[in-house]
Amino acid sequence: MNTIHSSTVVGEVLQIDGALNFESMPRLLEETALYAAQETLPNCLAIDLANVTDIDSSAVALLLHWRREAARLGKPLRYVHLPQNLVTLAQLYGVDDMIHCPSQQANPAS
Image 1 (tube, rainbow, N blue to C red):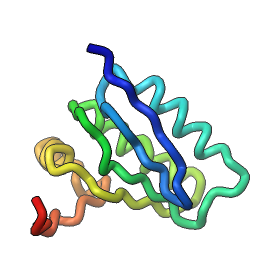
Image 2: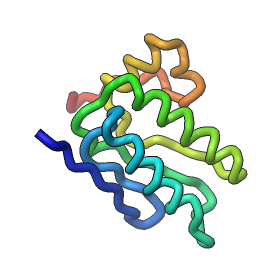
Image 3: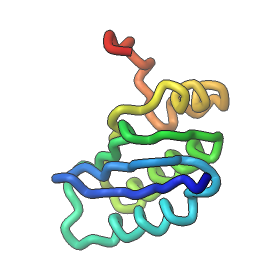
């Protein structure tokens, strides 16, 4: 089954939909590069991962890449709705502090 992925800018938030895995990386990198190339980037970049459906270890590398790109642009970056399995992978690899996963305060709805 082919996984569909897309990203959409809603206000000042880049919403990622679909898979966040090795197969989707080329498209995600292209789409986020286009987003970052905008002349009117917000003061604080935000990426919403609420609609991400599939995650593998390449997602951790992508979050680190996005963090480096934001630093290159001189913009703060925050992640919104980090999936718990992505946070767990980041903790497993010891990079959760690099992507700023706040010790995942328990979400009562989870």
